[in-house]
Amino acid sequence: MLHRSRFAHYYQRGKDVCVFHSLSGKVIFGGGKLLDLLLSFPGAKDGPGDASAIYTATSDIALDLKAKGLLVADESGDEALLNDLGRRHQEELDLPIWQMYLLTTVRCNLACSYCYIDASYRLPEMTLEIAEQAVRYFNRHSQGESKPRIVFYGGEPLLNKRAVFAAASEARRLESSRVSGGRFNLLLITNGYSLDRAVAEGLKRLDINVSVSIDGPRFIHNGYRRTRGGQPSFVRVTRAVELLRDIGIEPAASVTITPKALKQWDEVTEFLSDTLQFKRIDFNVLLPGPMQSNEYDAEDIHIGAALLRAHECFRRKGIHEDRVMRRVRAFTKRKFRFTDCPGVGQQIAVAPDGTVGPCQGLQGSKQYFPLDVERDFDRSPTDHPLFGEWANRTTLNTPKCRACPAIAVCGGGCPLAAIRDGGSMWEVDRRVCEYVKAIHEWLIWELHDKNLAIDA
Image 1 (cartoon, rainbow, N blue to C red):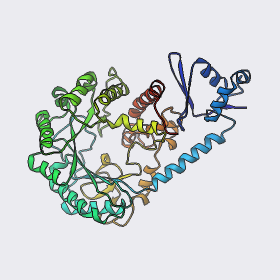
Image 2 (image 1 turned 90 degrees about the vertical axis):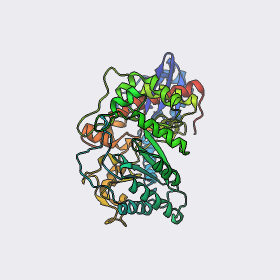
Image 3 (image 1 turned 180 degrees about the vertical axis):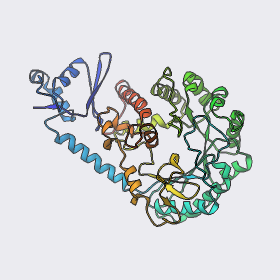
Image 4 (image 1 turned 90 degrees about the horizontal axis):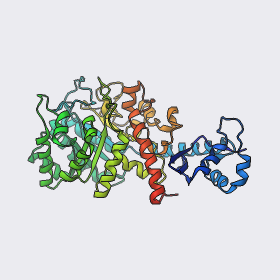
């Protein structure tokens, strides 16, 4: 007797129905009869269904449902697919680390009201020696990776610009000795407030990409991003964007989705795309801060709806935004997205004192930064139990995620958000759940309406 796979789900839109397998991504479109047929078969834990009569009348559809794993005779088919995904995830874990966050300072010249970095830790400035040693450490443990990336972060990394330039110079020096070849992709994430022409020219000389934090038009940006003395930062940040372009660097925009922005969302997206004409825009969803939850207002529009509206707008204008596009890529290539955060097995973060952990948001915590770039130079981070636990945090290994229809494109969100919101990295990142489900259903109907090509 056949029954529904526990990974069989469906979406309805008017008279249209899509039945799909949440792990494999295989889909069948139809109408009410398709849904009636599917639901006539019992679930894995239900009693006998009444499918026999309908099965005979619509055997071709039932056979199609069976061929795509939506109807199964027993649990073996689902278990085989889970085991195969587990092997594929292990293959990804066997790849080298590809990213390092280099945290040159915990200091910042802004006091953004939503900041998720715990400023209570009093870490020293990163010395030039530690900056260079961190690059050597990353170079050693990323051998075999063809596109290694170093992200300069903080606090505000340019408050210790000497460490930024020392590390970048060391990275460029080491490139010729890399076994796998290829250049380091260097990225500076900055608030732009202290950027001047001399710094910009140094960034250009070392081929450092730049992402500038800006949250929208003046009245929205200044509502959250002010100096420690309470002064607005908008004018100096937009001047930094102009300066970078003047010397030949096209910056990306790093945009935090704030409650004020959601209330004026079309104005925000128009400002970013038309007024400042960014070619790449990366949205950030509020993270729980060390002392506050950073919740969105209940009356705000859903994050998923906002992201999709922005994506539609940017797509027409040739602008890349990765928070939606990373799900589009997974969906169209039918590639299971095991993680959404490189911190779970793919990156290291080096704090100003040279300690090493998986997540830049937890800098200063000895619990999460157990290694040291000098003391543990020859020890692979992946051999440490903490990194091993983080590497296994996937939606497949998180019980609350197994039944989610969007599991294949999600990646599980942010461990830091889960820790601060739920007390454990194995809890669900609630922020991501809301918008990923909306994105996934949108992708299903895009497939239906536009006959999108999906890799087999």
